[in-house]
Length: 280
Ligand SMILES: [Zn+2]
Ligand SMILES: [Zn+2]
Image 1 (cartoon, rainbow, N blue to C red):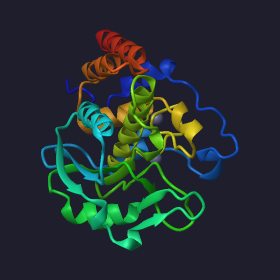
Image 2 (tube, rainbow, N blue to C red):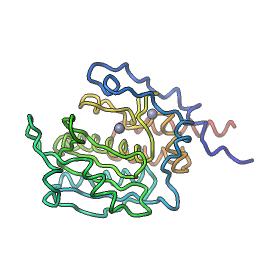
Image 3 (cartoon, rainbow, N blue to C red):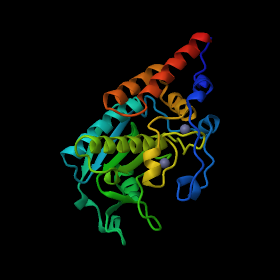
Image 4 (tube, helix red, strand yellow):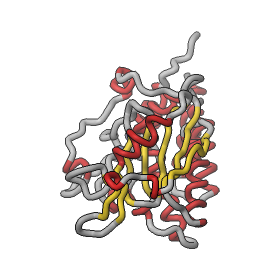
């Protein structure tokens, strides 16, 4: 018998673990953006960017300076991305801010934050330099980002087809010692995994509370779970062709080792999936 490689058991068995998505309040992402989500079937029908022998590696491009504390967050994020997307992560390039043309830099007209233009980084830095085997080519910066006219800022932006994404740690707080470091790390990991999820053609999730929920402001960002809901987890396991339970245990170990929330949820999900496959 050929096993079903679309992992229906993930949605069937893990649904009790999923938290409902709270109704949007004014200013929340879903109050301002009309999105209907993406089922697993819709995801397959979208012919997603998929990891495989041809698209095997995640490449990073560091834009601007990072001090030692910020670099430590970047290093852990690279490690996390490797686990989350089950792929080697390679630091490919550094781009000094001085190399970015004036049209792609600004000071926010009211707030004064120094910002870089996401569309420039995506289309003019990453896309021309993207290796053929890049599952994702991702830029990371400590400068603030804006995506163009009409926007104040974005935490990150990714293209669902072109295998490029960019995100910033600027709004994640300075990673000093103790809780400040933890907070910056958690926020950075969440954006990194969320944006890379988009690169693998995962759309925003409206099914449950989920790492792939859209985020409009800092409160919403900090309420974002660090874990995928069953629908999005099923998409990712199909995409990566990973055995779900061992995959979840690898993530749980990272969460536990770095004091991140979600470790118990990941471990419980792995146990539930083991029981599900024993019964079938
Ligand atoms: Zn998003
Ligand atoms: Zn989801």
